[in-house]
Image (cartoon, rainbow, N blue to C red; front, side, top):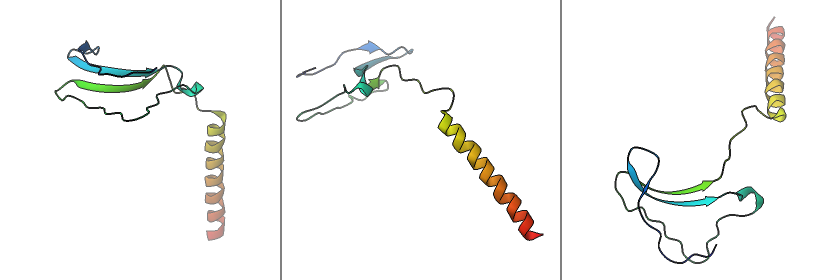
Length: 93
C-alpha cells in the first residue's frame, strides 16, 4: 500500500478515555505480506495521557494446549531428573 502524507485524528480506543490513535494493521503477516518502508519512517507520539501508535497483526491466538514436542520435552526432563535423583541416592548408600 503506497502512502505519502500524515495520518492523524481522534478516535475512541474502546476505553473510557478518548485517544488519538493510528493503527497499522496486517492481516496476513505470516503469508509474506507485511509492512515495508523505503526511505524514512518517523513515528512520533504527540504526548498526552491517552495517545498511541499501534502496529498490530490480525487474530493471532496462542494455542491453549502445548504442542506434542513440548510435552515430550517435559516428560523427558522429568524422566532424566528422576533417573539422576535415583542414581545419586544409590551412589551415596
